[in-house]
Image (cartoon, rainbow, N blue to C red; front, side, top):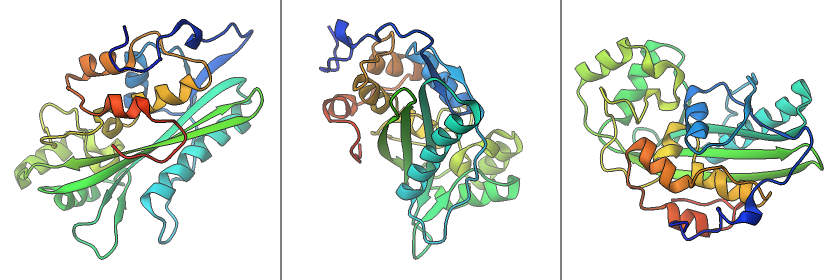
Length: 248
C-alpha cells in the first residue's frame, strides 16, 4: 500500500506503451540527476544553456517560473526532443538585509559565494523551485512550484571560508548544498529537503501522475530513505492538485 495516501502506485498510473516516447531532463545539474535516479525514473539528460539573468524588480517566484519554462522550450527547439521534457529551476530568496528580497542564484566566484553565505547565516530564507513539463506529442505544458522555508545555522566565518575554498558552493543557488555533511548549513528544516537540493520529487510525481506516468519507486519513501530525512509535508503535497502555486 502506498503510505503517502496517494494513487501514485495504482496500475493505471503506469506509463502506457509509446513507440519512441522518451523522458528528457533539461538540466546538467548533478543534484537533479541524482534525485531522479532515487525514484527510478528513466530519462535522458539534455544540457540546455539559457540566459539566467534576472529582470529588474523581478520576483523570485516569477524568475524561477520563467527560467524553468525557458529551459523546457529551449530543449524543444534545440534538440527536437520527442516525448516528455522535464525542466526545473531553483533560486534562493533572502530579504533579511535589504529593503526588497534579493535573488541568489549561483555565485559568480568565491567572493560572491562568501557574501551570500554571510547574508544567509543565522536566519530563515526561502527556496523556490519551479517545474515545467512539456509533452511534445500534443504540446501540453504543465507547471508546478515548491516553496521551502530554510533556517540556516549561525555558522562561523572560518567555516564559510573553508567551505568556499572546497569549491562546492560555486555551482549552487545561494552558494550552499543542504546535503553537504562537512558544512551542514541548515538546521531544523521542516519543509521539502529535495526542493532545496534542486528538484521537489513529490511535486514532480503529482504532475507526472496527471499524464499517467509514475516512477518505478514509491516517491516519498524512496526520497526519505535516500536523503536520510523524515519529511512531514509529503502527504499534504501529494493530496493537492498539481499546476497550482503551493507552499510547503
